[in-house]
Image (cartoon, rainbow, N blue to C red):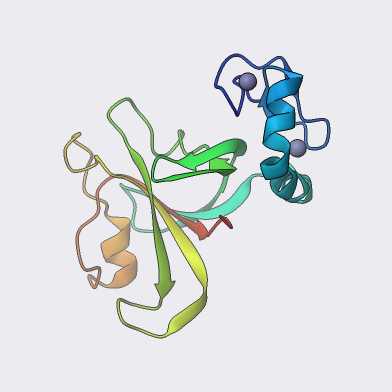
Length: 162
Ligand SMILES: [Zn+2]
Ligand SMILES: [Zn+2]
């Protein structure tokens, strides 16, 4: 359960009885949030608590590998302040000097054909200033065609619907 109220950010004492993943401090706050939350409540229940499948491009290896990323319900990231599947990337992209950022990709290559779906790229926006090592995996899988270098771990997954 989320430990702070989704509306006023004070400690939560109750939770949505439907999805059991949205915390509130009071009946008043849960009532206030319901018109917004009801849309997500059903989707959260459908999504369950299963971790999301993702591909890790490890900083220090040339082979990508499959990982399962846990999530909780809350603001998805600093640049997307919507309450939905907030990924817990801490095991891969974390630390006090890290800034998790999401980038969305919808075409194959920079100006290539549309993919028909959106891929979310999770990366550390501070990786070039916090001493992260250069990512070895992305140059390996792209044959050196990535338009810019990456540092630290990078995670790709089918985009969460916003
Ligand atoms: Zn509240
Ligand atoms: Zn709910």
